[in-house]
Image 1 (cartoon, rainbow, N blue to C red):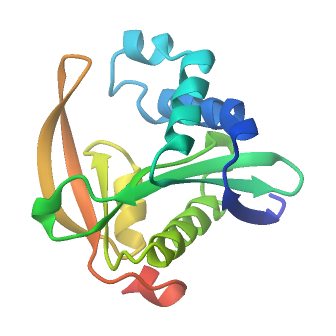
Image 2 (tube, rainbow, N blue to C red):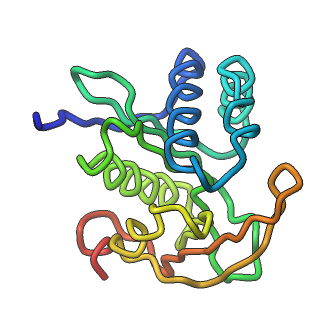
Length: 179
């Protein structure tokens, strides 16, 4: 495999279609056999692009990972923690990589850039909620996340188990990602 020439930047409104593509392809790859086919096949590019346009206008941040040759290959969104009961003040709401580029450093680059962005917004800690059957759970643990909570949510009427991964202290670089 060729080495990726990765960069991560703040997403712009013009990126909404690419954000939608990455999100939908990631969900369809990650959750096949986990979530209903009805839900996965109902995801529309138009609807998701509108959702990302709205998210970019919100108080948090949306980041996009790009390869110099392939273009956009990953995304993350973040902001204040929605569950204050965990004692963590920042949250990464979404972090997805185009399935064709998994395992090539884009997830780690997005995680580091997300931590850096949270730090510039004066957050000191971070939580990520993940579907309990998402293979990303292993990635979050490898990147230093500790299991700090679990819950059952509803997704299109179905109970969905989720696990929270927490970082009590944000630092940028390999040190925090291996602690």
